[in-house]
Length: 334
Image 1 (cartoon, rainbow, N blue to C red):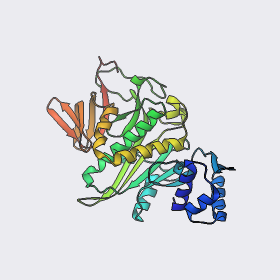
Image 2: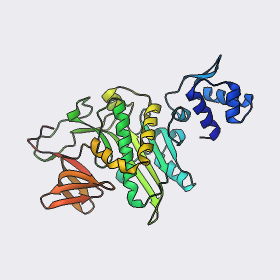
Image 3: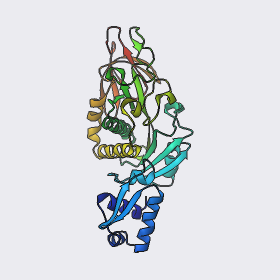
Image 4: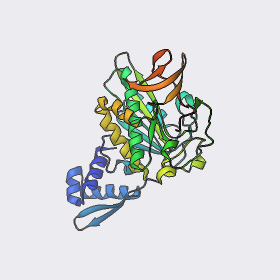
């Protein structure tokens, strides 16, 4: 977002503002102010000229300027109607030297999750990737992914969804929370069976990084959130904000995610406590598939920078990365 556009949107979001005042703030002529206002109208904004100045009467449901309007976090927004992958575009921007940019797409045609798994990304969801350059060693990178999971979880909760986090960064709705049984399927009753039908997935996050031994060059954190989507359009086991609590304004949802992430980014010490408070995995029996084998036991904690601590028959094991299954003992009512 240009400095002129940011100043204009900030001024209009604060209060009615006169044409001369806008011209002074923007450092442009009255005619240029009118052109900027007309550009906002072309973007779908309702802007009226009242006795005390310009007043915004309507904001588009989605789009770059709509997200930027009233956003209380210093990120540039690059919006696309259609994009292969927001993560790929953010990587390109990183190669160009950009920072603190969020790439948002109305729909994506080549979305992917962990291990290049396909992710459906039609219009109605929130598909975005945030490019940041933290002044931290690479070992701290997982904290930023966990921070994004907390941010999405909190935005979903603000929308009325009883969202939780499944290690490390899936935002889910547990069946124990009630709500819509969207694609829940039949739950297994076998002892220690994978609890694949015990939750519905709301969001996955793909993080990519480039760095050196002692510092991160850039991080791209890409949450894909099922927001205003019909569960019938989603893969088995998925749900959406709309299915759980009703449709929401996507621009507001994105703003809340970015603002919450920005808070946590500025206070990394708060990330793990916040994650623990929202965790659905801790206290459960889990089976984690790692590169070196399978670890099964009780998930008891998470340690810096996102390591899962699992209590097994052979003692505590620490898992840095892997696919986590929730297991449900036969006598567990969850």
